Image 1 (cartoon, one colour):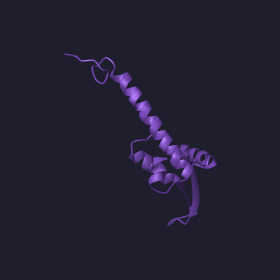
Image 2: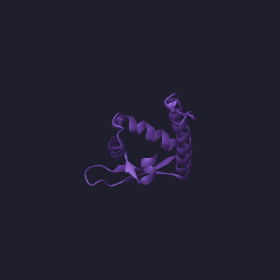
Image 3: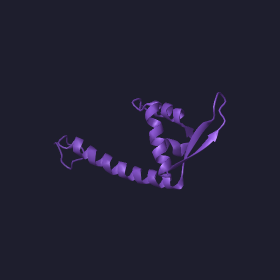
Image 4: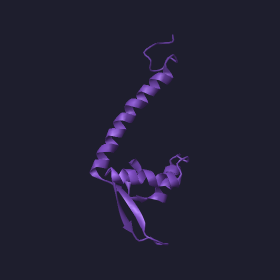
Length: 101
């Protein structure tokens, strides 16, 4: 959703952008069911636009509901990230409140 929040993208373009961010395990074929589900949940909307080569492409953008969901996800992610970091750092002397003097 964060990629779509930055700019309108079509499905294949989204998979390429995710790969550029290091999410190489996300296949193009797995993108479309997620986009469809997000569209049904009214988190994104799609519009058909002419393509310079070939058939029209469906470009997706975040709806207001999608922006709200993204903000909620970010908050949850930061909480989860902090908890995981506490677990991983426990006993290493980092961020666990203990000193290793």
